[in-house]
Image 1 (cartoon, rainbow, N blue to C red):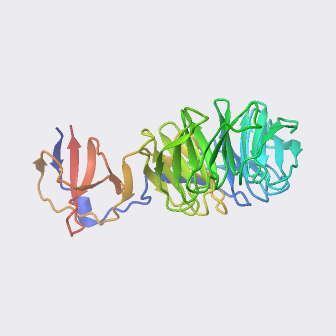
Image 2 (image 1 turned 135 degrees about the vertical axis):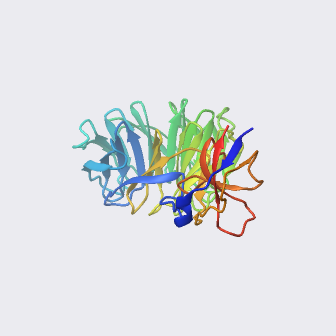
Image 3 (image 1 turned 60 degrees about the vertical axis):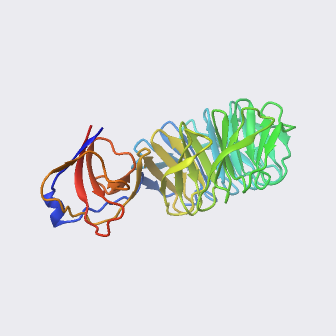
Length: 375
């Protein structure tokens, strides 16, 4: 049982405390990419951004709060997606097809191969020495790296927009026809498909689950334990249009168009729940994750870097904080429905021992009580 001591704070009687950042997902850095940022991949201390008409931008993220462009390669076409493997960045360059760029020297990226196929290359994944391209109306195309020789293909039903490779299978987000599962080594014939309710724009795989950015359908969680029979186990709605997705352990990061970045807990895949968000500047198209940081390709806003501070903090109350208690009071538990925020004004769902501010949910006044929670 926790003991809660109420303590007077004279400073709060004199002035309110306002939070500069009201979310547990905080913007920590930005970098202009000239063109609209559509896709992003992260490896080591670099972010590789597909920047529409301005091709591949190479950005140092050694200091996430100060991302700096160190090199670029102006690919033809429109750069929509990017994936990195070995010393190569593979760019899905729209009508200019697949472009393979050497990044052995990140400051001087150089094109070493390309395949200008029919259709429009919208998404790309790398698996070993092969690139898997979501080629819109022409489905999944597989190419060698670095030579860009076509090795195989699978004609999906509608608009192949995103792709990832995991466990010997390529998972293709195919627009209104949903998720396709294709053998990576022999891609001519798909083995399974799940028709999602929205528009499948992007896909990421973690464990035995595929996470689909399903446009207006939000996030769909699809079991791929049997690739021949994928089925939905859970979903989480999103307020805008889910374009891109990345998974990191217990969390999925969703690039949700005009509604920005959404962080969704998937510890229980059957009941995914949003635990954080940030309404980005620009339209969030793609996302990559490394450690505590999410890197968002945010359209005209370029690359935006966010830090997720963990589950349990929600939006700030934005209330003026003036304590009304004049002497310490000890209670055994918080009032039912009490609203708890930390010193930065962020709402806390599961307070641990420390200093907080409490307001009863039914209270009309904006006055709050400063509390110290101890076990």
